[in-house]
Image (cartoon, rainbow, N blue to C red; front, side, top):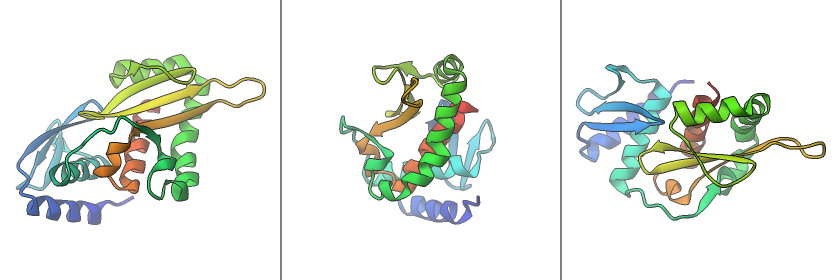
Length: 183
């Protein structure tokens, strides 16, 4: 999937907002944003387009509005238009997460904790919270299921994220979290 148009628009907007070079942590990896070069780098090499768009949109949101936590954890369905996009989101993010947890719950939790710096929190049968960006957390809740109910997972985040991200950006961020979790 090409992100060229999104990247160009984001860079134009950041130029209008007078972005200076910045360092941004995304899912435990440190990226460098070079405003004049219009480059997002990871370890000196160009970052992936998806990661670059997420970082640039995050910076736009911060510069425009700032990130303010609300203390209210919501799911993707509770975002503006989230119900509309829910079937596709469930197929691309929730279903692979459930399958990974069902196959190897200990391995997934170990990956979330050790590789992504997640920490155990209350919720579900197992719940892990990890930092997507500084101060922006995603909670992954898992239910093991039983003979009557299938295994299930849920992704939660602070409602304040919708103040800096569009519904589409929230979906992409959560899908990136899932990819890192099961990858």
